[in-house]
Amino acid sequence: MTRGRAALIAVAVVLSAGYGLWQSTGESAAIERRLDALAAEVNEGTTDGRGLEARAEQLGTYFTDDVVIDLGRGAAEIRGRKVVEDMASRLQPRTSAFRLRLTDINVTLAADRESAAVVLTAEFIRRGGGEDSIDAREFSLDMTRAAGAWQISRAKVVEAFR
Image (tube, rainbow, N blue to C red; front, top):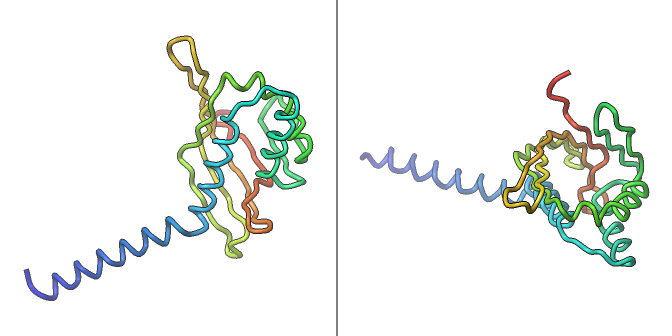
């Protein structure tokens, strides 16, 4: 191997490593970590009264005040963080039978680096009964950064077939 070729390979390795490090510490990675934290928060259970309210408020921190969630045909839009929190506090005992896993997260940052479009797959895994069952849905999200934290401002189910 010639010195030139060895130098070129070394530069390529260093650039690849640098790019990998940049990606893991960049805004896309921050958004992915935030979404992973949301899934972890959803998967934690509580059943007592004040615990339900506190968890609902914690879940609310992942959404903007004016969030809009569109679950597709046949479902009314969910509008506002307070509505999301109210729903989370009421539904928590029933949702504890499920586990949420977010996969295939694809982040596209806007030029201002303060907003992003995200496409992901949400897998709802029903626990128990010997064999888990999975219901997977694709979602598109709009996210904005407020006070340093990424929040969901819009979530919409992506309809595969119409």
